Amino acid sequence: MTRWGIILAALLTVSLGRASGQSPELLTPILGERQVFIVRDLIVLRDTVGLGPDQLGAARDLLSGYLSQCGDVARRTERLTSRAYSDLSYEMISSDEYNQFRFRMREQRIAGRIAAEQSLLDDLRAILTEEQQGRWDMFMKARRALAVQRARLMPWAMIGDVLGEFGLTPAEKSSLEAVVAREMDELDRPIREYLGIHGELDARQHSLKRDFDKERQIEKDRGEACLKLDERVQQAIRMIAGELGGDRGEALRAFHEGLRTQRVMKWTPLRRERPMRDYREVSTLSADQKKRIDDLIAVGEVERQVIYKQYTQFQRLAYAGQQLPQPESGQIREAADKAWDERFDRLKSDVRGVLTDQQRQAYDDGTEPQLVWGDMWYNPGGDWEEEEEPDDLQTLDGQ
Image (tube, rainbow, N blue to C red; front, side, top):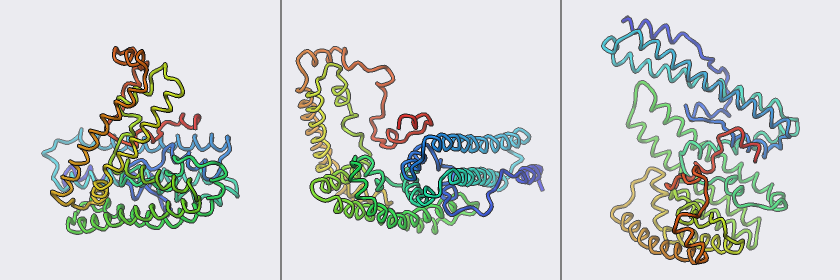
């Protein structure tokens, strides 16, 4: 055995706390080194099982400990790696030994994160009352749905996501409880199927011996599961909207379609795009002006969805890993872009027209909007998850 091989064998005897008898609820074996539990999961737990203030404080401490434990795992493997490299030069390492070392270090990191996730879930469940324990499965289903989005595996808006942003009244939430629970239960099956396929693909892509033909077949299976999940989400929203009924049911269907299109297309909401964002922040706007501007922007959002409706179907297939038909898809996109550019110019003019002469002058000379420097920086590229993903434990105080 080479000197590197001896060091490799010695390093890999170090245990980082491999989980034994791990729960099928764990997401780390599927998502690898992606973060699998953050503040949003805690918010969902609070809302799903009904955490009290003291329980929420305890849960926040547990989450903080989990994040710290994951950091310790990463730092420990980094130290082991640095220690090995500092003692050896690259010419002493064979390609096979180097690949094996990287693979084993990743295995150790994953094992440590599995142990941390298992401990967190056990501890969270331990702080629940017997009645709250009965709602744990509902939380786990919601968590799996969130994991699909957080890992950016697909853009589909899940049931809880749609209903949360739609803004149901307390009475509507109560009346829909049974149908939402049923649809989430049905949706969990294709989510599990998708995550299982993704986990298999991820494991193969990080293995020492790659089978590229098999990986391509699994990628195809994952694409089919991706479309199946999208169809099931649409079906669930139709069922919930039907239960809601009337104008509110129709509004929910339209809202879901708009949110789905926005995320598939990776759009920034128009209210966050310049100059719309800046016009909305003019400090002297009256309540009536703000409403008129928001109404114009809302109409613009709907019209953008209509303009891109055909191309959105192509983009949906692209997310599933399918090749887009050429030149048809390119021509449709080009025509949609041209139509939207013209409509957006009119929208900007209409919104600007809501301002008074004095407000327009203040905007043109840079006096307005009166934003602090940090507010001037935002992502115009349509990264929908950046705005919506809380990652600071302090955000729980304002939720």
